[in-house]
Length: 154
Image 1 (cartoon, rainbow, N blue to C red):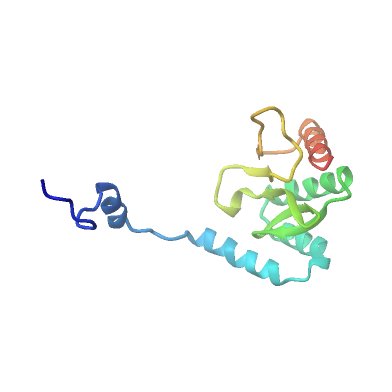
Image 2: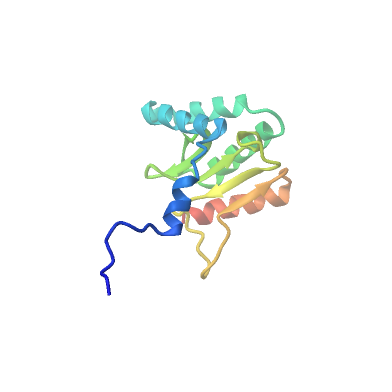
């Protein structure tokens, strides 16, 4: 019996992985990363102005939802600090993002998203939602968002 030589045989898995080429990031993803780099360089004390300026740039209906969401978060959780996060309005506690608003046009999706990070105190058993699709805001959604944000920072 002949001993097997090391390194002469590659698995089919690694050969297949080598033949597949990484296609790279989309223009939207590259843009978000560039925005994040600028955010890290920006003055943290001016987070509110940066968030309001970013909201003002949004097309409708994202702009209206983002303005309303900003007001809800500020009223429900004044301890959260507005800041930009990958070019999106976000709200942080102790410099850690707790929640953010992703406008639909950011990645050309059919709805905006209200997302919560792992810093949000929303745990319920072994599974809970970490993001919510937003097509519009009624009084019922606004009340639910206010409750979620309050719970997230509790």
